[in-house]
Image 1 (tube, rainbow, N blue to C red):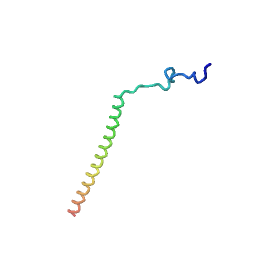
Image 2: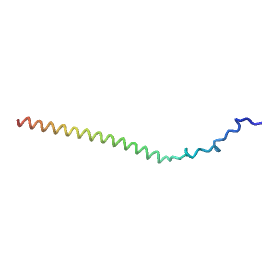
Image 3: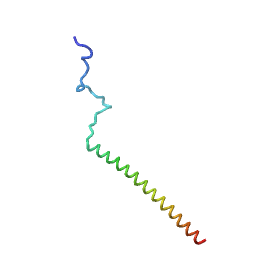
Image 4: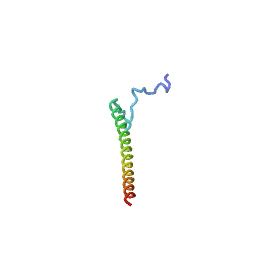
Length: 73
């Protein structure tokens, strides 16, 4: 006599549905995408620095033009 709990399938015989396939991910793939994330963060930081320097240059130019206008008038 066997119980119903003895009839459970083992993990080796369990089939996954086709809509949920197991895709092996290589270590190189994970490292590559981690590198891409780091490059995106670096690009964002560089763009922020460039924007700050652009604002600094524009403000400096306005100050210089204002000083010359004040000096001539």
